[in-house]
Amino acid sequence: MDHLICDANNAILDEETNTSGDECLFPSDDDDDPDYEPVEEVESSANTSIHDRGARPPTHDPDWYNDYTSYENAFQTASSSIGVGMVFDSYRQLKNMCAWIISAAQIQDSDAWKVKKFHNIHGCRVDYKEGGDDYNLTSKVIAELILQKIADDPRYKIKYVIEDVKAKWGIRVDYKKAWYAKVIELETLYGKWDESYNILPQTLMAIQQTNPDFVVDTVYTETGVPNEFRFKYVFWTFKPAIEGFKHCLPVLTVDGTHLYGKYKGHLLLAVAINANKEIHPVAYSIVDAETGDSWSWFLRLLAENVFGDLEHICIISDRHGGIDHAFREVPELAEPRVQRRYCLRHLWSNLMTKFKNKELKNLFWQAGCAMDVRGFEAVMSIIRATDEAAYNYLMAIPARFWALSHDGGFRHGLMTTNSSESFNNSLKRCRLLPVSAIVKLTYEKAALMFAERRTAGMVMQQGGLQWPRNILDEMLKRESHKYRAIVKRHDDLDGIYSVAIEGDINRYGRPNFVAININEQVCNCG
Image 1 (cartoon, helix red, strand yellow):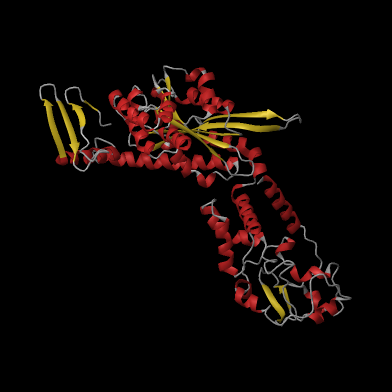
Image 2 (cartoon, rainbow, N blue to C red):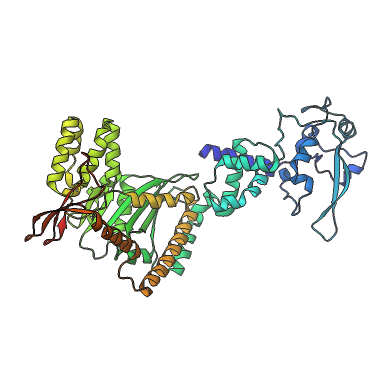
């Protein structure tokens, strides 16, 4: 992709520095002079436009410019013997081959132009082998067409750009031209990738000036050239995110994802769940690659700036080698204060990839989510009978890392990194942008989120709600279950019962009873 962008930049240079002297599509007043002759490169004159010479199209385009049908029909007359590469003795000879001409002049003290001469008869045609019918439809013109769509969604697909051009002008452009148009518009809206690294310090400083408690750290490496450095890492988090985490579950899910811009890299995230069961983004980092060093740097800063006075904290992640390295090498991540747990979905994916046994799918989830050791061991015995190798694979991983029954309560029922991955998905629109734009958009997104949640919290308080809305809805839902409950009494004195909800059946098709001890206020239902 880097090579492709480099080629595209060369294309910009070619278009902006086009010096073709002949301007047949938009001739000057000199065309009225029968003795006028173009400077050079007569053969390319029929395919040169004002856009190729760096000029901007008029604010009010002529109707024929936007009406492709009329524009296309002008080329449907019979072809003469004129062709690309032919050399003529004079411009007069070329004009005799094709009589089509348009001459216009700018109105004095106005941006408008007046057509002075227009002869709409062709004796030639567009050569579809050299240049094609989209030759004058440059990437700059296409970029103007898709401006608003790229502003709304930087991920706007190239195939849709091609479709937009086809719908507007009836011409199908190639992928490279459409892709290049998108690059032009992205750089117009968000800046160039090369310059983005140079303005990153200013972007961070601007945010810090308006948010004094904004936490930021950067790492640059020397290049051997005086006063020149190479970007390596940047970490940032917002004070409201740190303060808000004090009221969340003491659990962080961390995840890394690819950036799609010119220079790639990775975006690392730490996300929590607040009291209303909403995603609470905590910290961000852009690094050159997901390595042991980058993950160690990110998680160390996370511990220093976010953990605060928490007695215990749980970090849920996949089994990435870089995260393994960080937990071995970073003192701030040491047990017993910090407990690492594995994402059950990632472990399941690894299991299914390795053993490809569909029967293991539900069994693994049942084992991982079992509330007590007895239930865990019962499911594991079934897994052993189903696939001995899969059983040995799981038993080689300490159960406390992935089984809820052995967790000790640190993960608070959160079994996956779905929250961080979900937030990652919400940032997809900015993952192909320059780094300074990514930082800016995370700031804007966080500011909007905190403002909306502050307002929602005030509304709930003014409404006299004792619980956050999502929690209250969950409680009411569970309250309705009592009308469909099947209860078995075991010991009224000790408060021991078995309860099942109508319609909730186990893998054997029978009611899914769970054990409840009312006196101790515990159950094995999750």
